[in-house]
Image (cartoon, rainbow, N blue to C red; front, side, top):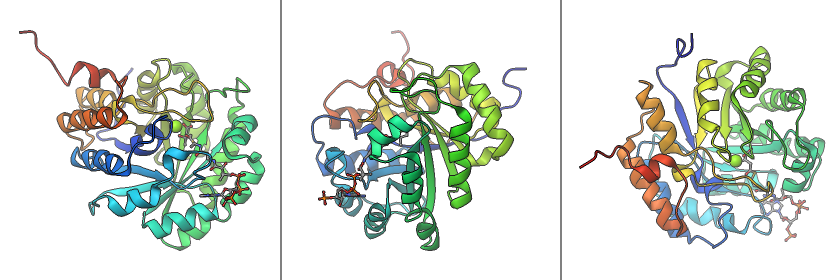
Length: 305
Ligand code: HMG
Ligand code: MG
């Protein structure tokens, strides 16, 4: 029966300071990014992607990763993570003192080439300079496999191709692969089929879901994931987010919507929803525009007067 099989607790991997902000047109000042990260930490989030050590020519918004990492207050029980495409990115991440890096690659050739200017094979080669050296240096390494539910350039994507990449990343030393619905096209039956395939080959603890909510289907896909034993979900406060090299990629699943739903189902997250809502207000102030998250807009719970 539906919802017979729910986990007691879920781990949330917060991506708003990176995936959330990377697509913002106006440059967000470093101190404002730091304010957002500290508000997220105060809400109880324990895994936060705070920066991106990619080329500032490609993603200008992320050009201040080192400064962000230097300026932010760090809590001992929080894992601060950063996106990292190559050996140069790893050196920057190590100097900035993050304890985790995240490599990223697409399951579709065209998106991968547009995003990192390399074929999938060349990208995996570049990861030789990241994953194992990082693990040897004591860092945790996470891997993203993007465009699994659909590619903005190619349309349907072969799940087997994505699975081969995910297995490769885990074999090389990633502790987890985050499966990306980069442009938010996924629907529940597709998600079930995709996860059935992946779970045949990869233990459920090693899989996370990274769902953009472009078409309002992210939470429905989370429910499928929960039922199938997935316990890590990526999310972004206020529903902030997008990929500059994926036209049509709107915000990520909003963290408040995820936490509200999980708590309502009796699933623990360790997050204080009221404080998270406040962090969403910070995100909105930092971006200077309304954010799309539903709980962000409606409030945690409002009673009629
Ligand atoms: P390239 O131009 O092919 O790289 O870019 P290159 O190796 O030929 O180097 C060119 C220049 O970039 C050189 O500088 C390098 O030093 C510099 P120049 O000599 O011209 O002054 N460079 C770097 N600078 C800083 N940090 C680095 C770095 N590496 C090279 N690490 C590259 C290749 C990967 C660098 C580029 O394509 C890039 O930065 N792409 C960024 C893509 C990106 O950040 N996309 C958004 C994140 S992915 C995403 O959002 C999806 C996700 O959320 C999951 C999902 O939703 O599915 C993760
Ligand atoms: Mg993303």
